[in-house]
Amino acid sequence: MKVLVIGSGGREHAVCQKIAESPLADKVYCAPGNGGIANIAETVPIHEMDIVSLVAFAKEKGIDLTVVGPEAPLSAGIVDEFQNAGLKIFGPTQKAARIESSKAFAKELMKKYEIPTADYRLFSSYEEAERYIEEKGAPIVIKADGLAAGKGVTVAMSLEEAREALRAALLEQKFGDASKQVVVEEFLEGEEFSLMAFVNGENVFPMVIARDHKRAYNGDKGPNTGGMGAYSPVPQIPDEEVEKAVAGILRPAAKALAQEGSPFTGVLYAGLILTRSGVKVIEFNARFGDPETQVVLERLKSDLVQIVLDLLHGKTPDIQWSPDAVLGVVIASNGYPGHYEKGVPLPTLAPLESFVFHSGTRVADGRLVSNGGRVLFIGRKARTLEEARKQLYNELDGLNFEGFFYRNDIGKRK
Image 1 (cartoon, rainbow, N blue to C red):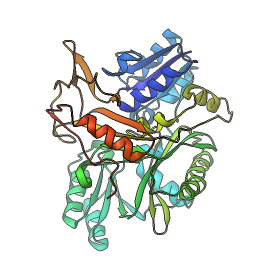
Image 2 (image 1 turned 60 degrees about the vertical axis):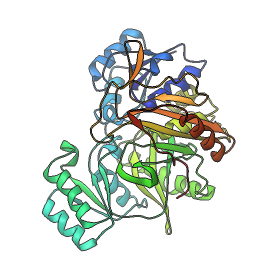
Image 3 (image 1 turned 180 degrees about the horizontal axis):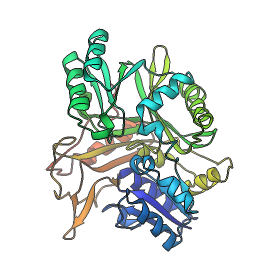
Image 4 (image 1 turned 45 degrees about the vertical axis):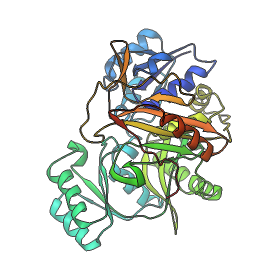
């Protein structure tokens, strides 16, 4: 088979790696890919949002299967366009992807189908939203309604911080159309975790859980990012709570989308929190999470291409997981998630025993340089999380990451 992966980050590198390992895949393409993906797949200089060119490329090359990584092309209807062209693609349609592209849609769906989540209100008026937060008090959560690359959420610990988030979203349009409307939610306390599942209609096949560290700095300080590290398994979450989440959240969500005329095919991601009153939904995504995918797929023993084909053909896939633990750390450009420089040279990674996925890199004058805010994901697989953590940080501490930073507390209990 010829397989095309859409996207350019660490998640896509991990997906390409798994696909390249499959005996079913003779050739792997990635559009547009990055400096690391080029080592395992043929990169194609077509932007992920240039759907017309991607369809034309898939037809020209006789692509047998396309797998979509990022949320933006999904929300733009890439799956619909490929299907209309008679091409096999794995991901949700534009209507089904609304579970991520509109937080308002997701919250209303959960309310209608009694899926547990935080209490909320929707606002497009700054004055009305300000009155509401003053009535509710802090801490409180402000979310841009649309896609904001993981940066549209503010967990405001004070009313002033909440006002700043509302001003940025509703008055300054910081996230463009994505923040014309905001969701204001109650603050939930508990243990967070990510639960992804392979889904086809109402058939849901859960993956192992992971935890993502969203805050930029040690001790969960600083602004929210696209994710600074992840690990799997998550010992703080009992197996029975995961089973309850599959039965009480993922399966009802898949059924709800089908009943609303938007059946979901692809990877459904639930960002969850175990509170005193049970597991609740923080957010849904319509694709593999980043950076959770980089640790979860490292634990997948089964053939990813076969799983996807089985799903698309309505069969029950055989999904086997390694009992080992995986932990990984994001190397980010200084200044991320704010302003940062590109083109900064990276240290030689050849001596590393840990695995490396490239998130934002390119090759310039024969050497690897940064090309984004999150640059690398470096991970380790071991018998236990503590072993993986120690081995990974021992290696990272031996490299000179001048111009970059990373958290040194990924996987530590608070």
